[in-house]
Image (cartoon, rainbow, N blue to C red; front, side, top):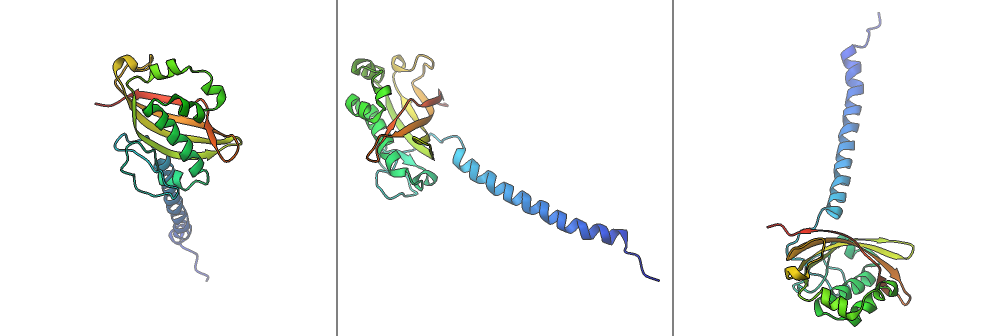
Length: 196
């Protein structure tokens, strides 16, 4: 008489590979979620300056005027062109250099501001903690995802958010204008009052 396979043994034969498959799937899903979170998590508004050397590094530079690029952004092929444009953007703001700002922006954006209104809007503003998280290539250049903190007198705060300290999250669209240079278009903006 041929012995019949035990129901418990048959269940075990199928249960082990299914359990292993679920465990491997959960592990891979966790690793993917960790990567996404590391790249897209909200910015920390602690000490966030940035690199000005052409070789990407993983450490934050000591100069608070420099834009800091996370390693994910530093390793992007467009890093050096983005770095030059975004650093000029913040240098122009902090130095009240309208000429530099206009050279950094696309003509369609720069022509919308007069020197008087642009400078007046930044009378007491200082930007700090500038961080770039991600660079995404586009057909025209790149979209650059980052954040910074602005501090200003209340009278110089934006009309829609009256605060002396504001955290900003931005997507700067950049276009290649030839010779490897990027210029910045009108950014997408989310902002909120600083905590505390």
